[in-house]
Image (cartoon, rainbow, N blue to C red):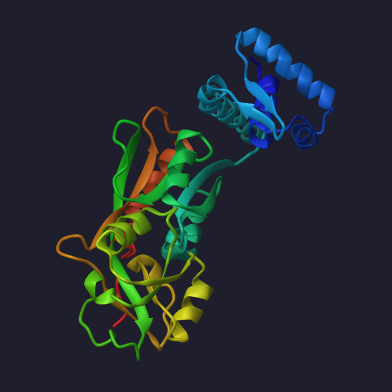
Length: 305
C-alpha cells in the first residue's frame, strides 16, 4: 500500500461515495475505482460494500482506517521536515489549550525571539484531546494541556496550577459568596467550554449532570467575547480556568473560586511524545519556558484584587 492508495482509501471512506471522493481528490471517478480495486486485490480483502446510499466500509476497512491515518500523518511529518530544512530558521509548533498563549502574553514571545531569533514559535489554540493527538500524529512538537497525560506515551513537565472559577456579574445573587460550590449552581444559567474539553467532562459531567443538578446550559463556547456579553447581560455564569478568567477583567464581572473538597483545579503541563527525540530547537523552547515562567511570575495565576 503506497501513499496515493492510502489517500484514495481515506477519501472514499470519508465520503462514502466514489464520485464525491474523486471530486475531492481532483481525479476521475474511474481513477478512484481502479485504485480501490487494485488495493483490494493487494490486500485480499473487500473494503467497501455498495448499497443504494453509497459505500459502506467493511469491518476490515474500519480496522485499517487508524493505521492509514497514522501513516499519512508520518508522510506529512516527513514532508514538513523537508520544507523546514530549506529554511534558515527552525520552527517549533505548540498546540495549546485555548488562551494559554494569551496568558503567557506577548512578552513571552518577544523574550523568546530575543533569546532565539532563529527559532519561530508556531502556536495553535485547541482542545486538550486535539493537542495530544497532534503530538502523537507529529503535527506539533508540544502540547500544553491540563491534567496528567498517559505516561506510557508522553513525557510531561508541570507549568502552573490553574483553579476552576466561576465568573459572574457583580449583581448576580451568588456574587456575595466567598466561593461557589457546584450545588450552588442549582437553577443557574451556565456558559462553559464544550464537551470536547476535559474541564467540561470533569466538572459538568461529574458534579452537575450526574448528580442531577437542574442547570440551564445556554451555550458551550470558548469565545471570550460571547462569554463576556452573556455575563454582562445577567444571562449566565461562566465556568472556566482562572488563567483564562484573569485575561478579561471587567469592572462588572467578578471571579469566585469553584470546586468541591480538594478538587479545585488542575495542573497545566507541557507535553511531548515519549518516543520522539526532541530537536535542539524544541529543547531550547522547553528550557526557556520552564525558566521564564517563575522568573516572570507566571508559574502562579494571580487573581485581581
